[in-house]
Image (cartoon, rainbow, N blue to C red):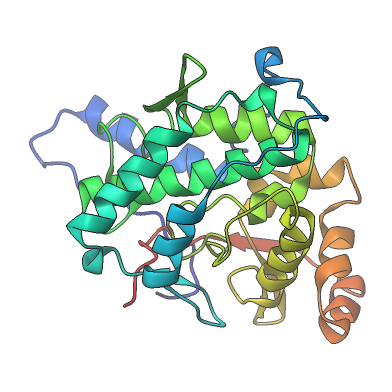
Length: 282
């Protein structure tokens, strides 16, 4: 992988008509250069029972992470090829159980952890169902970039996509830009899949830890030929960071002191990149 932003798409046949090539190019170009899906408030998920003390059990998901997630300083990877049939069934059972949860019966903190774990477990499940593949963007019909708009689970009687969970539930209901460090898209350029499951007790601390980690990694923040190069997450979701402190101020908050000082003094053009290769050991 070189330092240029990498977007992986299927190679169309040379016999395809021009409109096909144009449309395929447009899909890849739009994801690479424009803002991602906007946050869209979905009122049906807004609420909770702060007096309800029960928690959702995420142990099966933790067991899978413990066995197959490989932690690296440069970026965590997942051993999809090694997942046994028994553990595929364990993941399936976990997702089936989560589909029966009534989120509004739980506290807001419990809900936040529930949705993040659900998103990440669903993503791993999607990869396993389509493995082997080079990138999550290979999943789905040719006219759609990846599987994020596919209905992948039903919760409380409502069919949901990954985009629904991220952009219609997590982002608008919590307005926490650290969500971007928690939801994992199974790609090398994505913030790392957390080795710990999220719970009502650890989510806030874990989000800060994941933010610190991503900002310290080259895929998050680096310099190339003297230019500041950031993950495209900060371009796609700039509105989430600008509404708070602004991207550069946000980065300074989580960067190591020497990096924060360098970011603070930066006045040049900011470049962006992203690596869509599957986050498995190379």
